[in-house]
Length: 226
Image (cartoon, rainbow, N blue to C red):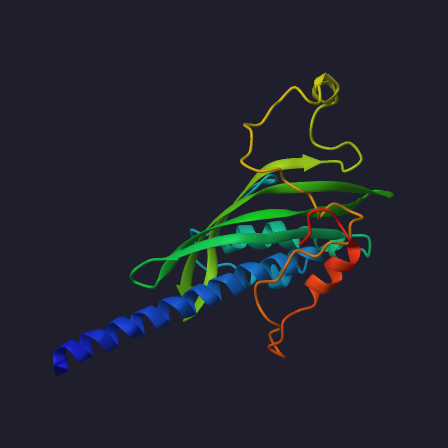
């Protein structure tokens, strides 16, 4: 490998390292956003967003433009943020993020799933929620921030009632749907209260030793466990 080829290889490796660092930073940003939402830490949430005038926050409550719009929405709920009965847990899951070649922008897609308890008047509204976040990110002053965030809900339901309408639940007939025949009989071992622990494919991260779930599972004497 000559000097020119070596230089090209080094630049390629530097670009790959930079992209990996960008991905890690974006993943951390989005996960932190979710933790801040839990207790409506509105200032921390606002700081996750870009200062750009074309920043967009697109939620069920409405669409908010610019950093000022983001501030208006999140700080508008500050009274709830100090209520101990508030809970707004939306997990940021299964993130897929792609960084643009220029390293200045990125796009991501995340599942959101969680539960909320929102103080309302003398009481509290509870709900289960699930959906997908579609997010655009931008790097400002060397830091990644959320540029455009859209929440696309698929479930918003009272956990005591579920998300399927009562008439559709009542109309269901168990056993009518038949799956194509499998090549072998499935033994379901994980349902509560089996106590079964699915095997770990990796050793303990500190000791390097195999974990003890296999010995644990043998003691349960569940049919189908080797």
